[in-house]
Length: 303
Image (cartoon, rainbow, N blue to C red; front, side):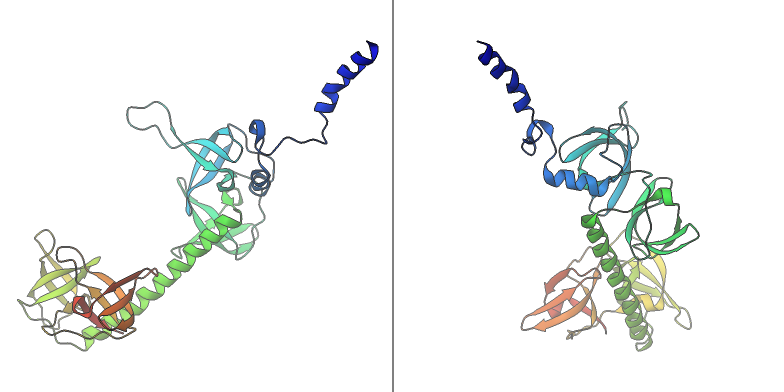
């Protein structure tokens, strides 16, 4: 009997032995991957309910919130103001690898992709350009400079850094596209006569729209147009924002900028011709998107 009691007494000790860790994810325990993510993104320890955080609710869109519940690989958080007619703030869930403790101590490094608070309500992707006597200067994806307080800087993990890097590359390509496009517009305007009253043109006011020329003052620095594909109204636009619509079919070549005229009642989008094949034209957008059409649908601006 005594031997049996001793045997029963040691069973709890064996069952609780630390050499037998629980299976990953069992009883709410974080998996190995989630634990690694928590260490990378919250070096001061696991996030806890009530802590202020910055989260990536989209790959490169960020907002501030307060942790309400932490699970194995995700957390629930509250953010913003209550919706109209509601008393509680809004809630959402995000992976632990996409949440960071607000105010965590960081060591800024020139060239690093980060998350910056640029005003009282806005957190945005940024790249650190310089660090001088505690002053952190960063650029957002639109190349706008900001001075950032260290307490308002987040250094995210590798996945978010990769997303921000791709965002910056897209925006840099877009700015390059725009610069080259405006040069092509200026060359096209310089090499063509002033549009005559009554002629139908493509005129740019934010986007390109079909319009009819009403008046062109002496010197043709600007043109008065009447919109044809939007609410009726007149507008004065700059001369180099007006493209004449030819009567004959134009043949695009790779490198040309062109407007896609397939949408009769909508703005005409700007593309750059990347390839011309038999019966098709391959197009690229300012951020690298692709489209295909035929030459008859294009209004060619030039290279």
